[in-house]
Image (cartoon, rainbow, N blue to C red; front, side, top):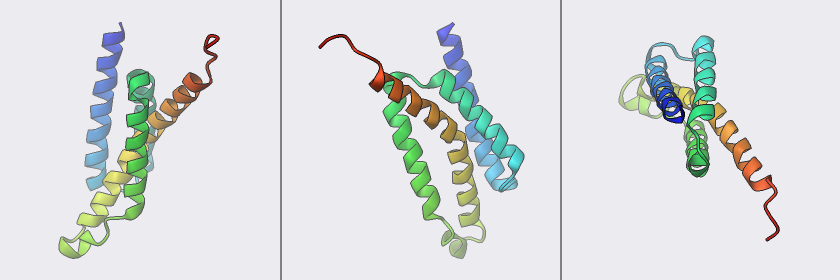
Length: 119
């Protein structure tokens, strides 16, 4: 059963990546797309994130946030619209990964706060 859930989570993750990529190009700043990405991110976080994956996921989420705030607008001067489209794709990727990162952070807090035996 765990393997099936892992496969489902992986498929949902790939769907979220594809949606973020395509929507970043054709549907910038779309509320429905954001809602779907958040739901997919919750599913990914609930099904895919193991204890060993918490730190890499949180680092990746932080990187997305930092890159997203940097902005790719200067690329518009090279190829019209490239910077804006890249911003939208990163924006959508961050919306996909944010719920998964919140779930991972809560799991990390539970692991840290869980009482351990007398050591």
